[in-house]
Structure formats: C-alpha cells, structure tokens
Image (cartoon, rainbow over the protein chains, first blue to last red):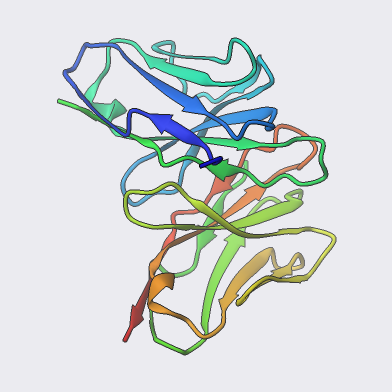
Length: 115
Length: 114
C-alpha cells in the first residue's frame, strides 16, 4: 500500500501521560499536514511541513503539542500531559506541492482517548 | 477567516437516484476546493477538486459545480449506490499557492436506501 499510513490506529492513555503518533506520507510528497477531528466535526488544521521545515502552526496547537519531520519523510506528533479535551482523531495528510495539484491525501488517523 | 458549511446535516436518497450535496463558503479569496468522503473509522478520501477559474468539473459518477458569485459549491453523485453512504465534507483553500491548509465544513451524512 503506497498511501499515507499512521501508527498507532488507536491509543488509550490516562490524563497527564505523554503520547506520540507517527505518520508516513506518500513517499514522493513534500508537504505533510496534521489535522484533528472531533466527533461530528470536520478536520481542523494543526500544522504542516514542507520537507523538514514546519511552516505554520494553528492557534489550536498549544505548547503541549509538538510536531517534527526530521528528515523530510515521516513525521511525529507528540502531546505532553494529555488532557481529556485532547481526545480526538488525529489525521495526517500529504501532498506534492509544486506539481500543479494541491490535493491532500489522508491517512486512516489515530484515535486518541484520554481517560 | 474562512468558514465552510454544508446546508443540511443528513441526506437520504434512494439507490439509483442522483444525490446533490451543497456547501457554502465565506472567503471570497478561496481559490481551490475539494470534496472528501469519510467512512466510519477511516480518514477522508479524496473525491474531486475544482479551482476557482472553473465552474464545473466531472469525474467518474461525480460532478462538482462552483458558483463564485454566491460562494457556493455542490457535489452531484449520479446513480447513487449503497457504497456511497458516508459523511461528505467540502473543504476550501484560501490560496492554493500558499500553505494549502484546508478549512472543512461540518459534514453531511449521505444514507442510501436500498
């Protein structure tokens, strides 16, 4: 499968714990995006990378959230000191910027439950 | 800022009929739009996109119409099938040449009756 992959698919954690999610984009894609989706809502933009550079972060991304894309390939999203309000689906998407198309392809998501 | 919304939360259609899902956006500078389909437990799946310099684009069984005057777009699905049952989102980009971040609406649930 050459699509976007995310790991883990599900994560249950206790409030106050740290969690880390991984995203592997489509291999030739230079842009990688993180979104968060809560039940009944559309995805909300969190941050994005072009290659290894993090170019924008949403105001939704508190100081407890950090994302990296160290080699311009896979990315990680870490949430420190999780809170119950962090419970959501975390989606990763990738795109090939500069090719003339701007479509973003999403992975299956990581569902986080904070108890 | 950008807001994108769908007109109705649910739509029920008979199998074989055509479906029309509508979406309104607020930012007149939006120049790129995508429709996504999301099945339960899965990530959004790209259906079709359209740029602001177009008013219609067709894919396989799907057509997207864009009316920039009233800031409205629609997704038409021909001969709706049970496999089309899902939540549909429209998403807009302020300027496709910039950060390309998508602003999504809430989504509409399409149910196909056999």
